[in-house]
Length: 263
Length: 199
View 1 (cartoon, each protein chain N blue to C red):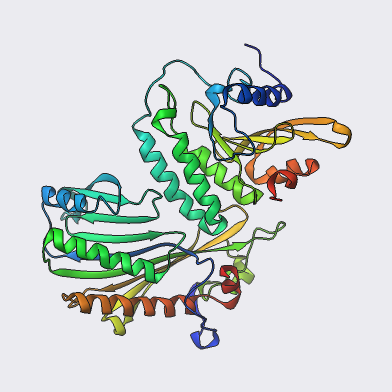
View 2: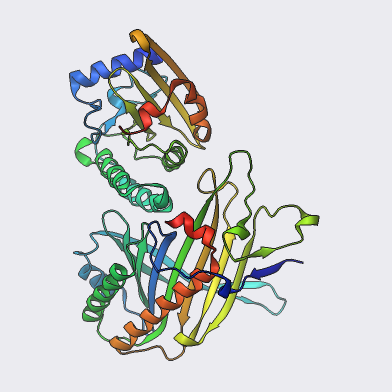
């Protein structure tokens, strides 16, 4: 039977919070709101971001529900179609997603670092509140998608990922043979932020996204849904706490050998 | 029209570049080029259709945004300077002023192969970039005589052509169609680092 293996964090060295080449592919801070903005209102809000995110694209999102009928057959019902606005810097590294009931600030690789990312979120939050007016926050989310590219030796296509990540799928390899790939998902309570975090990990491919490397995805999603802060100072305090927790979670998920890859 | 040999292509392309200022000056690697300027020189490498001239396709903006986003997946393997240079080259290749009707925006599969090639070759010297009329990315390293050129196709396939100047001024020409993942192995006999490594 496969088990989700997690080594003890106390065996690990917890280094400083910054790396020369951080493995972060994408960082996201997302707020969801109780009330949705109308289409025209959302377009107007998007316009207000034109100076800081000159690139704009629109996407149509269809929301639907799937419910079983008495015989268990799924019935799909469309709830609505919404227009979202995707804004970005010219180089697409900094992005903003505006949905009728959500806003998300995105930082793509190469990650700018927490200080720059957080400052940008604060700026965008102020632009949003000025444009949209006060809205009740229903959910605060912070997501960091990391991809650890482990060099493969020229003559071998198998890498022992357990030497690099502490969270992985462990299986009886003496019977199954070497693990070629896996996918796992787990949820943990996170009292310090009044919520939980979701961890997803997988070995990408085959084929691997980066030739010559085994790529392990470590995706952390920290969420607060219960009584999320409504005051700006409380919101920023929560996000700073989430970030500190994210660092602890990440550092517990990798080994010193992996850290060497980021230096 | 008869296809030229890679030797003729490389020599003629450089001559054409000097005459029309469309080929890249190796001293100015920031200037991209369009293969429509070269197609009649090397139809085997740059098979392009010439009918129709006009504005960028609407999806040009879309493909640029996608390419920049996709490059973020390779950020760990690209220096900041190379990433910035790549984006400047892509912007220029899709510049409306440089566009002619019928030109296709860059193909996604070509760009993916290019990024794979970069990861495998690990060049510290960034290449000149160009694009065929039908959206395949081209890269060139080296100078007027001694250089290697590559066209990045779908599914990690690369068409390459090179001229190497050996001792005594003897020129060696070679070309091939290989996987980007094995490009370094196929170029190994020609001391590829003299193209790919800076200084």
